[in-house]
Image 1: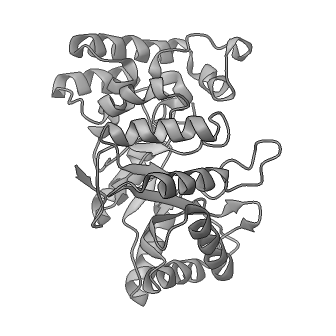
Image 2 (image 1 turned 135 degrees about the horizontal axis):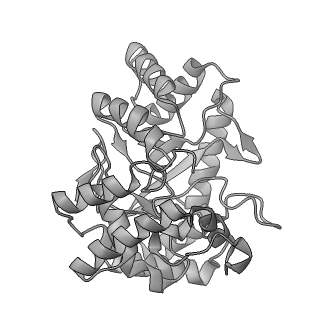
Length: 317
């Protein structure tokens, strides 16, 4: 088990991404994936109020609704749920009143009295940061949120949030969620990890498997060959540099008798301040590899090998 930053949340070091629920995984499939995840020892679920508003006919909140119905049906013990605010079509931005209304709507969909970990999904520079920090702090004070966190924030803005929270005596973030994986390293390692180390923030990286590229399944940059909407995002990584990374991952995976996906997640877990990479599964068949990635321990030399082969991958790739 791993503790998220300075919080009291101890989790298996893997978060199941809820972005596919209500999108590429329907309700029944989502229930099956959640069952398999928890049966395998998983206990950390990540979602957002906007998932999956981009799907025709959806309005946002579908993922939270599915998770809430699953929680009500299964009544699992000790499961930690994280969600986010700022991108739902009806609750855009991070003004104080909006944060409150969005949190209350998320609680209704989740069927919960309290959100375990509540992220500011994207920075909103149209709102004074003091207002946003105060709104999150009030949610904690009122018992609607246990811990606050930030996602997609710059290092400078994270520092500013923490300074305001400390000065005003409200809850300080315990986690930060950046885009981070073997093909997207530089920005996080240069700017976000130093801040996380300084303030004891836990990193919960999203796109941990680069939309599936780091499973080793996608070897062509021709997106027309791909079999799912998410896979089309993975195609852009199948460059010469990206395929060298897959080759190194296969070498390490073979040595452990495990998968490329599990090895990718294990490398991420080995990075400073990382507590739980986020990875999603649209079928139950994908769940075992994710859980294996939460338990696989790489040697220092294996981590260095993967560091070297991915070192020059552009941060914007």
